[in-house]
Every structure is written in C-alpha cells, then in structure tokens.
Image 1 (tube, rainbow, N blue to C red):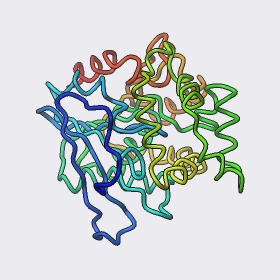
Image 2: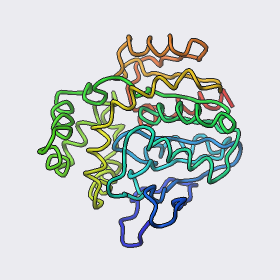
Image 3: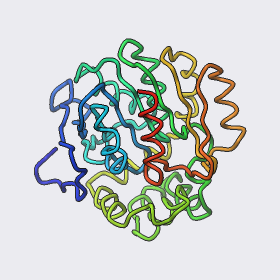
Length: 292
C-alpha cells in the first residue's frame, strides 16, 4: 500500500497486517492485496461482503484465533487493498483475489468462511481449488436479486441510484455517514451492533481515490454473483450453509440452495439478521469451534 494512504483506525488485538504483491509486478492489473493474520492452528480464511473490509470480523477473530491461524482478506479494491483503475468487480475477478491469497501463501487444508458476498466467493474458490480447501462455511450467501436493496427503502433508492447509467457515478461519490449507517443497519437487529467507530472506518475507506468507482462496479456486477451459483455443485469439500432467520434472502432463496446442495449441512439461526459476524460473532465462533 502506498505510504501516503490512510491507515486503518481500528486495530484487532492479536492481528498483524500483511500484503501480497501482484503476480505480474507493479504494472499488473491485479493490485496489491492486504490481509490480517492472527492465531495458531489450521488455516481459516475470512471473506467479507460488499462495502466492508477485514475489520468486519473484528469481534470474531479474537474468538477463534486460539484454534485457527486466521487470515482476513481485504477483497480487491476494498478496505486497504489496492484500487486498480479499470479493474473488474465481477465475481470471477473477486474470486481471483481470494485464490491469490491461498496460492501465494501456499495454504492447504483451509476452512473458507465467507459472509454474504464472501460466502459466494468461498464456494466458488473451493470449486476452483479443491486440493487446498478442507471445508466451506457459507454465511447468508448473497446470490439473489436485489441483495442489500431488500434491507430498506433507503437502500433500494441509494443502490438503485448508484447503479444507474450516467448519474450513478455522481451518486456513488456522495456518501453521508448517516446514510451509510442507516443502510448497513438494515443488516442487524440491534442497531447498536453497527459501532460508530466502524462506520467511521468505512467512511475513511470510501474516501480513498477511486473508491466510488469500486463501489459502483460492485453494485453493478451483482448479477455475476447469481450466475456463480452454477458453480456450487462443483465443490468437493463439505459445505455448511448458515442463514440468519431474518436475513435478506427469502425462504425460496434458501430452499433453492438447499436443493442445489442436497448434501450440505444447513443451519438457520433464530432471530438473526444478515451481518452475523458483526451482531452475533459468538454464535459463529461456537459453530466454527464445534466443527474444527
């Protein structure tokens, strides 16, 4: 990461920050990737969702780092990973970033844990790298129409505006803190679970040069996540699908994935919303400990 860029305002105890250089050198279109590392034990990779970053797992990492070596990745262009002008934010390009982490660090016997967008990437990465992945925990997969726009009327209006041709590029540059907070609060039951310092951190990242283009690219390429469902049956590792009862996905969306993955373990957490890692990290930690 260039030294003049802002640094994270949140530090997760026990973590260290690292980077992975582009395979093609400084002229590569891939961009430098940033990740956090903590703990000891078998490798576990955490994958965040849209408009978030590795700090999304700030409360989960300390709960599982006694049993796993945890790697929390900033997906391409997000968090403090490098923003490459003209980069793609379709699912295959994001997946390539995850695969770089596994291959460049030569990780094997990996547990892939993804939430929302990260859940889709965990599944498709496992399909591509069966020799490296031990199991997949896919939390509230973001593989259905509308996604975060289902969380509230405000989210639908703002995300729809960002996706619009022409004017969308201008809207993407306007991100008042109260608006971002309200949109993300649509993913938690207890609004206090979305801490103010975390929203401040996301706002700081959103001010990085080029980030509005990243956000717009992500929202406009959400159909590629739906298309990625076709890769799920290719996964050879055991799969655990985890849904919050109040997740944005509809019962029909969950049932469709159960039909697509009939051998997968399926858990629905009562009273839980979309951002389980933020609001209920202890529930996710207990699940991961029980399956180690």
